[in-house]
Image 1 (cartoon, rainbow, N blue to C red):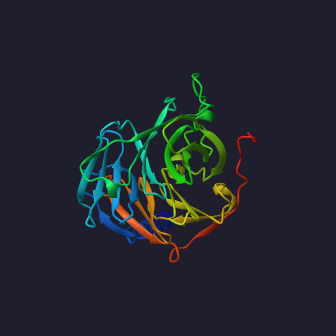
Image 2 (cartoon, rainbow, N blue to C red; image 1 turned 45 degrees about the horizontal axis):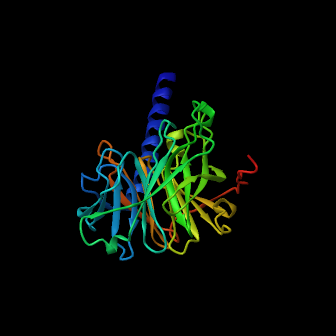
Image 3 (cartoon, rainbow, N blue to C red; image 1 turned 90 degrees about the vertical axis):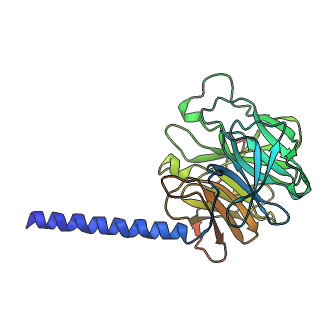
Length: 310
């Protein structure tokens, strides 16, 4: 009798898990729009140009290229940035003029001292297959030549946005133990060498680092909504004051099953598009959500730390 009870309980647990996994998969795949060309196997940044055409970049290992993507996920055009290197391209954003910024600032081991952002002209104005970039360099003043202590490993970077005349950088936390905090830094948006200014921080979650890492960021066209992406969710910030993005209302949008989600952007003020990498038959797609149709779970406000408070 006891053995039968244990077997019955085990079956029930597996059934519940199967149902939860099925719901989680449906939550994500119900939002799927397209699957990408296999050449775009590690998309790390996406943006729509002023004609609403989708562009993407690959992570490290690829040439320093942008890819224009057709509506079926195939590649329409490739543009080589002739004076750039793809050491670790991790995100892409644009300003209100349509200039694209390509972030070569991946810093997995927290050892890179000078990081690079390439600024290129509006892709609409690029007639051929090559372009040159304006080069922005920056460092973290807090990151010295001394080895970084495990609890301070918060200098990796995969997310940024352009706001007015500055670029805002959201770190990918690699602290041990993992504390879930993304730090917000600020640099200029023109060719120069900058000391990144620490202006705030936000704690996502501490469940597991790979679930809570911030891997991409986006601002809505009207500059009134900020979206941060991790493996399971979108963190949406609204009603903030100026560039104090963490000062307003915060909500979380569940994206379903865990996949390696790496890039996010706004199509319009109400539509968000995000992508994930392919792994064992799962992912490698673009998905979209309508903010007025999804469930947004309100989150407690946090008092973001500033450089002075640190």
